[in-house]
Length: 200
Image (cartoon, rainbow, N blue to C red; front, side, top):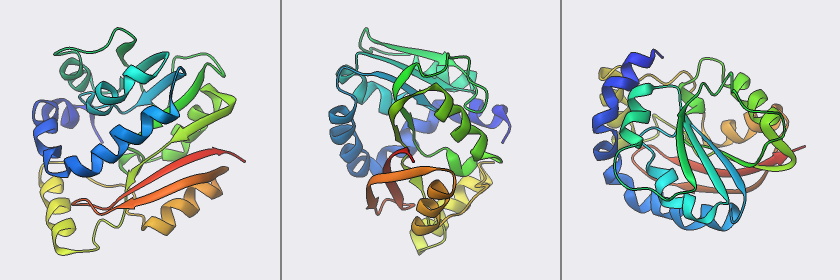
């Protein structure tokens, strides 16, 4: 998907996600317990919603997106001192090997033509005992609300390269060398499969 689409979408992204707040609150509550005093990298941060809610618990958090428009939105408003926003491509990261304790990528793998490249980069920048937190939309056509919301996003130019079911997403992670330690299905407008993984 072209950066231009995300640059245009950036100013309204936060408003569009408000309807699913209670499911995001689950992540806002759980993720801080997993990143306490750790070096954290977030990929595809968008306007920084997740980062701004959880970064207080980290030792340091670098939140990135390949859309300059999204990063401009993320840099607006207040955020904690240990959080910085940077433009970076999840499939070609500018960070050293084994430099982060946790990598977080939410709702992005399904829109990437080659998400395996992002997983390879995540593996590279994670420490050997590092944790990948990768909640992702699944089952895009599983109900009326999901179909409607998926259709609205397509009209806006946001397409899903991969339309995994929850089980297919978990299987895909396993096929790419990640062992799921924890999972939770959250029935948002489009079902969200929250997962925490380590390397096999």
